[in-house]
Structures are given as structure tokens and as C-alpha cells.
Length: 178
View (cartoon, rainbow, N blue to C red):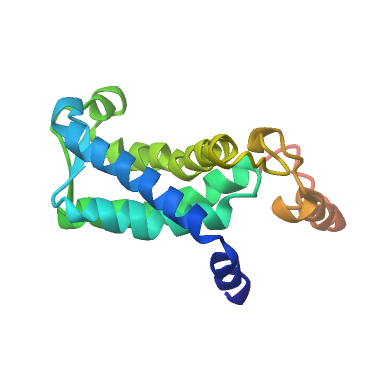
């Protein structure tokens, strides 16, 4: 936990401010457009500030320099409880007959919504890296996160799992059942 807190503390204030302004602006825009988009909305406007500003900004900063698939996976895992609890408690609601329900069915709404929301930190980090380059002339060491090399410590070592399975003797099935 300490490395995560250190990373948040070491983040420059102007980066925090830029993230906060962009994320809260996008969240506010989506909340204002929700009656026209008719997909989902927060029950209360202050939820934009808490979710986008106080939850997604730190999450995005923590995930910023990781590869795209790691950012997406962590984002889905972090966003899922918020969305599930929000829809269950009614602090967030889905518009009846929305496009997600129409395409995937009403029982799949929350799952599809979480999978789509998982893109927020990934897209936010890409946009903020571009904005920082435009505003401050600074470029990331790896400006295109999608092209970043995948490091061994970031992926599940399937070879070790396969090695464990190979160590067990194969059991052959009987050719004829009694």
C-alpha cells in the first residue's frame, strides 16, 4: 500500500488539477446529457464530484504508466463494486429501455455498463498525456500506452501453470464404459 500512496504523493499538483478539471468536466457533461442519452445517470449531482473527482482521478493516476490491458483490468475491478452498489441502492439508475438493455437485455445492463466504464481511466490517461504534451510541451517516456511493451511482471505466467499441469501424470480414459 505504501508504494501506491507514495506514487500519489509524488504526482505534481498541476497534474492533479488537470485530471480533476477534465474528469469532473466530462462527468458533469455526461450527467447533464443523461436525459438526452437515456442510458444511466446519478440520482444526485454531487456524485459526479465524488466518483469522477475523488475516485477515478486517483485510480487513473495510479494506472497511468501501465500497459493498456492492465489499466483496463484494474479499472473494471475497481469500478464494478461502485456501479453494482450504486444501481442496487438506487443512487444510480438506468433509464428504462436504454440502448444497452435493448442490445444485451435488461439482466446484462450492469455488467455491460461496468465493462464500458472500465475504459474511462484508459481513455482519460491517453487524453491527459496528450493534453500535458500540448499545454506543457512535455512528452511521456511512452506516449502511446497501447504500444507499450508488456512486461513479464504484469501478466499471469501461464507457462508456470502449464508446467504444474504437465508434472501430473496424464490419466487416460477407459476405452469402453462398463
